[in-house]
Length: 342
DNA sequence: GTTAGGG
DNA sequence: CCCTAAC
Image (cartoon, rainbow, N blue to C red):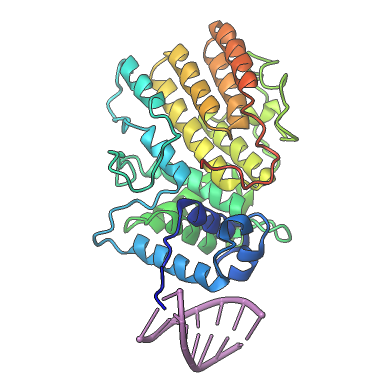
């Protein structure tokens, strides 16, 4: 009989990738049986997972006529929301149009292969700064409970699986790791890395807003301390990335966290060049309302906004109420399968 | 029974 | 997707 050869859906691919991040490659049966992913992979066998992963890998490695950046659903959403490559030239003002465009695309209809002019920021522009989130993501995803470390080769292969690295990509990741160790964000143990738990950097440049992040805290037991947000030594961006990834480690939702980190990072870049805080706040809150996941990003939004300008408090509380009413914060502790967009 | 690889 | 060798 013929073989229908049913095509893999984006959800299935995402479940597969998440499963690999959790169990590692080669544990196909575990992934297939894992209750987290089985709902999406029930029709696939372990051998199917293996074959699919082989195809996906070769698609990423082959630079022939497969220009698709291999974006997951969430990736596509974020990519679509990044219309500007953030030129090196310090743009004096971010045109309101930019912010408008950023929040414009309703992420409800995101097809993976459509003709939407997704900006190819992944080619060469600012690719170096994009390694950090992936590194954190890899560590968060691959850290095993017993050893609590991640081998460097695992980190690199993890990143390569997500996006093909340029010729010197491996080198850059390595230097990036080294740099992060120097900054005491990571800890190196032989050939493995882990998150540095106790950060000896002096401390507690108490943010101007003391009550902002805490009052709502309904987002499960996310260990979010004010010291995680800002250290006097580091930039806000680094602190945000680090803390978000720490949360990711705790929640084991690395992919979601990575997207959130990208978002925070991008918005912070945006904010540093300009001080259009109102647009910033509106933008990030729009994001929070559209996507059901970003519980902690929401907290950071409050923190960032208020840190930049105390005048935003009205905006913040307003947005807080709005977000609460939409009930968009319920995902943090759910089964973990309901995360991505449909 | 599972996985890796060739077909 | 199927088949097979290897573990």
